[in-house]
Image 1 (cartoon, rainbow, N blue to C red):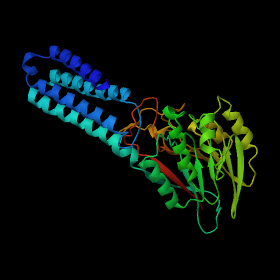
Image 2 (cartoon, rainbow, N blue to C red):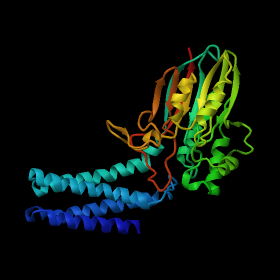
Image 3 (cartoon, rainbow, N blue to C red):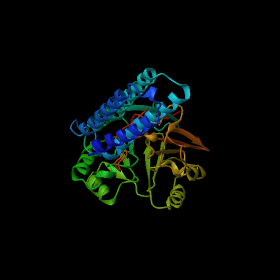
Length: 363
């Protein structure tokens, strides 16, 4: 049905465009309509095959609308350029077909390749020498958004084991929003998380989509995972203390919670804040938190060259969209995360591959 609606939309738009064209330019443009229809059909095929290849499990309706809109924009831009520069029809036709095919290739890359091009970001942080003779290694895993266990989740576990972290921190959003009540998704998320191990523990916080049912089903009985619900946990290392503050998204009381927890940090401890979004950065800086790990933005998930994230879901917009920032005495890192948005959005990434972040902390 989505394919039929998209093709009908393209036909209507094409007829309107043809009526606006000069008769001399209309020649050969039926080939463009055919090419566009083929491109949209291929994109629809790419979408419906994703679950069969066990890559992602999203809806097709909104993605098809967005993909079709992209092709319509190309047609509209071509019409404008033709009338502006008096291009010959064959030149315009060749350029437009090239652009339409490019959109298909970009869709294929964003759906099938980049979401699974898992990267490791190594971030050195100046900190006490917690472990004499080497850096303390903390692995951040954020925004799993599990739908089913795919090659991405398998790669996460393999990389986590190969990095040999001293600690692992999970900064929220464990199951995709469309699958919060899906037993298979909950079970698969539990299977993934239960395999995470580190000598000094695995610490988790509650993200923006983590309902009580998700937290209960995924984490109950996992003794190797410490869930920090608006609480602080102090870890003793041979070379110093690390105070881990876990703050839960909770309708506007987070600043007060952070202030309370910050007051409980031992004077001789280095402080690490785990909060799902970067939106507490000003409060964290005021509280003199040393290190703040966040996720939530997905780095935009879809990024444009020279501009970056189109949308971040952060109150600060693009100000803290991904990566490292220093605000006062606080070092903030915003992870691009691993999974993708729900709500029927396309399960794709563009110029924004998933990442694991390994913090190497020491002198």
